[in-house]
Length: 151
Image: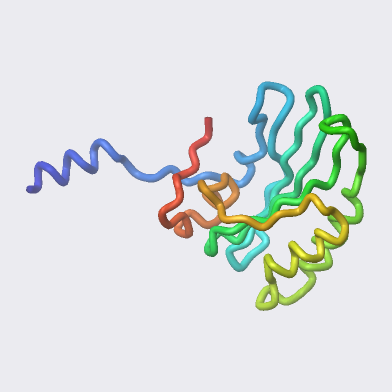
């Protein structure tokens, strides 16, 4: 019994804590990545996903790590489809206004509705795997989600 426990500890090792700074990275060789990760508080994090090969997009992600839900809003797009728009200023203003509320009044549903008025390309969904920002800021909120690992 003791030998099995020691073997388990030796093979699993201690969990390595991530820093939010490590989440800013290139995710697709030179043309895609994540940036501007922040811990908002109350179990919430945010980041920007970007893409810039044969088209450009910028998506705002806001996640409630404990509820394992995320709002994703397309704020900029050029040449991904037959359309071009830049809603970054308006979308980030909505986001900033939401964060000026008391954290007790944060609501992903409200944020998604407000962002959808600016960007119809807004969705609220369940997280299917742990995000880097949640892993760094709220690692105990992972629950049954697939654990995030830096590649």
